[in-house]
Length: 460
Image (cartoon, rainbow, N blue to C red; front, top):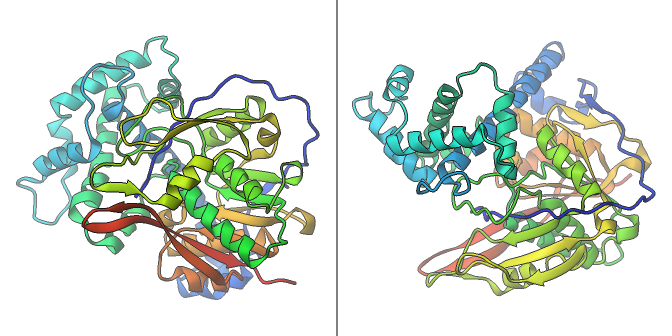
């Protein structure tokens, strides 16, 4: 379950403050760097002679997946947004069922839809009408932030036939959704495998913040005197257009860095005056957005994508978390306009909190920061990114995370892959604790939950 959060940005100017030095330059990893996990990589067929070419290939593939992720959000936006058209929104999964199901009629059972069959059918009429409205809006002077984001994305696209591009992207996105929601429903391992070739999504989620808050609470209970000064958030993301339930209360915003800062300060693990948080993302648009937040501290408009109904109820702990969220990074105004049953609030981030955050580009699979002892991170958070990695990529990412951590540093994530504990231990990050958190209960069904894992790097 993923609960989307939407936000709005207010203007502001950051006063001059003394800033910590930026992290060392990012560099590609070498065969020497991955010595701790080399045996696991060799078992997968990677050798010293093939390492550099494989890393280069993974880097190229990642750049393609970043673009595919952005284009996926564009399709979700075209289908759901109510800002550029009055046409009724289209739920992406239902569109996938209608479109791909229609294409599969007459295709070989269990086989892929032939490309020529899909291209010859074109877009469904309702989708085609929304594409027409979207392209008209793109050519207008409308400065709505999401539209501006996707206008820039299209401007970077090769070729000039935008409708054909959107048709092909629609097909790709619908094929993924059809597999996830209908072919592999009830088969979690098969569905998880789809994510390892999916475009790299920038989605952000409330429950990631909640699970991380719980994990940090466990750390505080284990070590009441523990202090965290340097934090790395891998893939903080930005809220553009979710797969379903799109809300447009305001412009896109990155949520996780502020939730992490708030949790650290509220739990007494850090203080605003001596904390540095680095948001490292593979998507350059996310990095640019986070860098802008230092100059214009955001006003976060938070709305849960999950709403209470007669069958769904937030857990009391989750409700308490959402109520308190933001007190340590700025000022809160509870409530506001939101769909029935949804929780909502506004958090005005302070200039001091905004000065804590810096952003850097990083591909956690093929790159790392070149850090000396005093620069390594006390805490690394990597939620909702590890599912996108194949086994080789996962091992490389864990090795890079471990190399950038200080002795006794902590990694928090929510990946449930059975092999991960062993892979992490090989990288010097054995599991120490795990917790399952309940976001909401569901009548006559299992609760909606998230899981947090705490790994600790071996000391000197």
